[in-house]
Image (cartoon, rainbow, N blue to C red; front, top):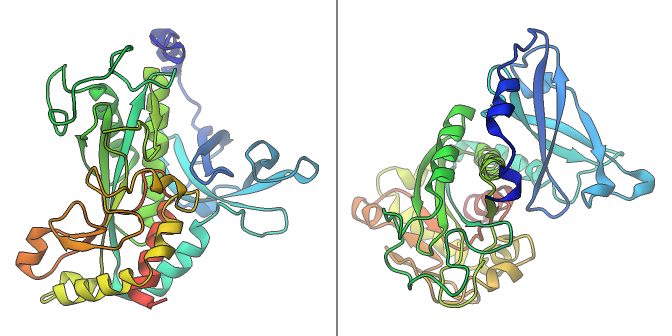
Amino acid sequence: MEYSARLNKSIYHSYMTLEQPEDMIQCMYIWIDGTGEFLRSKTRTLDASPKDPSEIPSWNYDGSSTGQAEGSNSDIYLKPVAIYRDPFRRGKNILALCETFKYDGRLTETNLRHTSKEIMDKVKDDVPWFGMEQEYTLLTQDGHPFGWPKQGYPGPQGPYYCAVGPTNVYGRDVVEAHYRACMYAGVKISGSNAEVMPAQWEFQVGPCEGINMGDQLWIARYILQRIGEDFGVVVTFDPKPMEGDWNGAGCHTNFSTKAMREADGIKAIEDAITKLSKRHSLHIKAYDPKGGMDNRRRLTGAHETAHIDDFTAGIANRGASIRIPRQCAEEGKGYLEDRRPSSNCDPYKVIELLARTVILGE
């Protein structure tokens, strides 16, 4: 058993059943750190249950320890923007997703939510819907894929996708715990499945309208990482955790506007693809935290990906940059799937760029 899971959980639960005072609520403030891909959190006691994020007090933290400030002027401010039920402490306790600001009110470099929301407000009449398919890989704490032989490799890919059975599925307990915890929290989780590489999984969130998509995916990621603590399993969103003949991990993003979902919406879908083809390099640079370098390891033209330097589109083609689901093509309306975002993308940037390119024509 890995180190972080060795603590006696029955002892822990004996304390968690202690009565909680009516005027004391634990609020977990959650934010994105200076890497743009990892989360941090800390707890504050509130004296009443907030009904809206604006009722939660702003707070601060040491930005010099999160890559967001110098030690000589280290305070970074937290502004709660979304509330979720806490599936770990339960009861009236909450999770609060926060934006981050510097001492003078400027956005931190990794606060991409703020500008994303401005765009979502501009395009709200087009009613943009998003659904994101978050792939991830389970590892042991020494960085080895969970369930893989310590010496050598499992059998070739083929029997693991959507599989069942102990020789094909590794870590389902983590997946099921995450699914239930997301439902409890209020995350619009819509599905999960084992992926092509063993120890790789996917969960889906959505459809969500506007900025709610980014909020919900970040909270779902946080919940998954916390569950990993309990099981002593590492969750990685690395887009290519294993080199060689193994699938990478993406965050395929389903996108539609009101026009795409209505009769003859296929014309709006095709128009959107034309616009996306002209902004391919811009999207690639924004679809992972390292300006495309992480995605270059994944988007090779193999393992169900298009090549990073080429823009392609097709019906039911999982080797294309943009896939039109066959059902949408047959019905003449629906949505498109952008298969380019990496598993460690910032969802705020992805949805912002899709709205900018397709709706605003920027």
